[in-house]
Length: 263
Length: 105
Image 1 (spheres, rainbow over the protein chains, first blue to last red):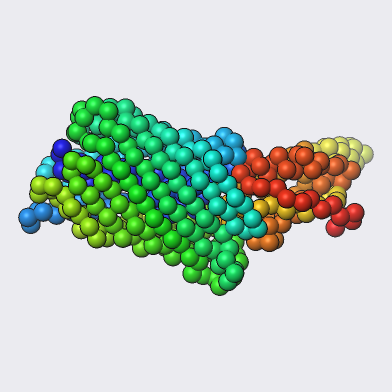
Image 2: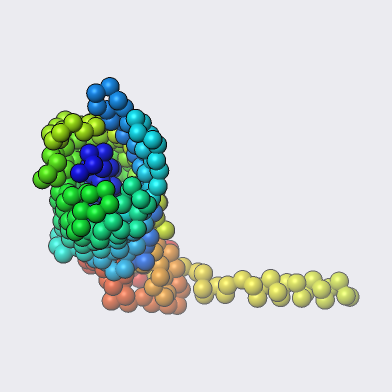
């Protein structure tokens, strides 16, 4: 496997969070309301290094989610990628993905919800050369969310997501199966009580595992400003575990800024 | 005389272009209990689905954290409990009791 592709493919799989108040790097078990469309994009800047060489990756995923029923939404994800560094710079569109999100369990109470959804999708081979697996790769996932107001009147959000992408052909840049696991907690920092505009502090653990290549685990602090129509977000991903076989580029950090809106 | 006729015609056109009072005047206000509203970004989805019901004049979300949404009917029109519950479910939330107040704001 092309080692630089491991970091790239993990990043591409990262932004499936496309609905409502999802964390910055992972997904949430809430789906857009019937007839509601959510558009989300991020700037994801990664610095990686090995043996004195450095590489910079800029990712701009565009994610569009539409609610078809109260419990089913479709998500289209198109990632744009630029890589600069020790090898010749390159840029292009990575493999677009189409993902269905189906909520199969829900327990609502006043200003609080517990939900679980299935993610069923396919990553297409339509990305540009050097950014594509050249194969149709199924994506399977499950996500659980507890979100709502706690006794202090502030929002609390807990998310857990497990996602697996099956590589069907090992063609192109030879990206193997990837398993991702994410845990996220969010807590309202401002204001002190219920409001229509809130600032959330987030802390995520984002892990990825490829059997033949190794594993990475990031600690990801961040901030989200949430209003009725807009969410602005910013955060860092700091590697705390990088058990990669061979001598690939290792991530130093990823900085993320993003926006999402609904209509 | 011509000026008066023109003024009269302009007034008629202006009135014809406006909605009739019955389309815009607020009628009775209902309180719909909605469970699962868990953040501000959730609100437009339920607002849009409730607004799409025929006979709804306006939505008030200021008590969302208490799980309550106020729905005001167009005067002279009535919105059924079934339509309200369907709209809440379409938005992905759980409808609760619906209280009808026999007063106009």
